[in-house]
Image 1: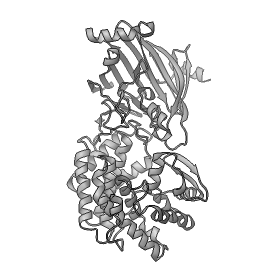
Image 2 (image 1 turned 180 degrees about the vertical axis):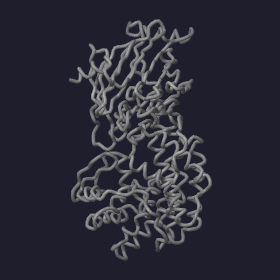
Image 3 (image 1 turned 180 degrees about the horizontal axis):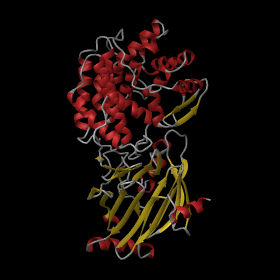
Image 4 (image 1 turned 30 degrees about the vertical axis):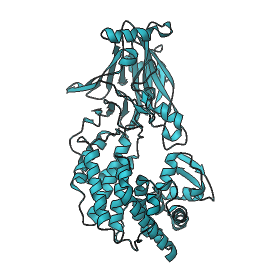
Length: 548
């Protein structure tokens, strides 16, 4: 109804100013698109000679990227022939959908599309001719009127930021929209920044990649406003330093983001560009943000999820799981987001077993509930860190398995000051009559007399792993470095795993180190270590011999 009503109104006739795009596109990618290799959101469709609007979308994310027009950044970097072909896609969309039909008429997608159309309007209109130009401006007017009515309907967080930013860009660019449209969009960004950006720079979804996109949207809008001689709302401006600090804290050694709660690693170059465009210089290092603890010593970086699941239907059961990089190379990882590979992968990727952490009896630390698939929250979660000259300690506990198995999980981590020694201890115990009754019931199932638990360390595909010392240790090769992993209190093995990379068409095979143990007499414990093998010590020699 709102999309239909938006058809009525005066169309703008000129672009007053086109905000400078924040991103630089890829001309080679534009040529691939024009040839019919339609890769969006990690999914590839081959459709040579066809309009993309005639293609059946393989995933919802693919369709959203197409209708959001992110690919116009690549269009802008293309040669004239390629640009002409992709320009036709814009006017084909106008012919088919500008009247209010199709899947693109959602407030967040409309805002996303408006921002791209306006940023690249000079190139879109170059050589378009009078009839196409009039159609383009009519479509801009309809989308702006729709967004002015419907931006509040976008879900809070990233979708609403996208919608409000679209209004800002329309208000800055379109003749006659400088008043109410611009004021509405600028105020909306300020209110949403005040409501959705925490004091530590986090957001409710606890998705680092979504955080990076919120930051980029606010940076782009602020730059656009300032370029037109206007100031962003005070709350908008105040949120940027907090977001920048949180974003820097959530990056691993390769510049990518930790992969938690449905987020991928992001594009390091885009993150760098957004940080640079913000003009916000690094301040004191942030040790904790958005529920994640950052343990960093020398070349080793660890990001540890120390809070309950985020306020999102896409949240993962990743409590007390971590990712680890050495230098610029990821070593221990989570499997990553699975939504773009189908519903089964989406659900599997949300489980604790798809992360580098502990699971009890092959169940997750949080369970899916309700039609939306939200995760239940443990009743108690705590994490305390201490630092001294020897390194960083982190002591954490949660009761996510108290109701199902009577167990509380305790995890202790220590990273040495030189970053070459990383140790952990995982303990589960049942304390008190009630939890012990639950434990006994769980232990009696299948007459096993104990409750099994598993600790997983998923490895990045570029890390090589092999057992040595009669299976009591694992040798890990990471580039030119060798690390040795040991575990006591359980059986160590190397098993198959997957790396869910959104830039690939299919999951990528990798390995995981697995320690299997059991809780007996209301208690179970495993200790494990990662040490860099160097010098002439016995571990280094044994690892080198195993490598040979």
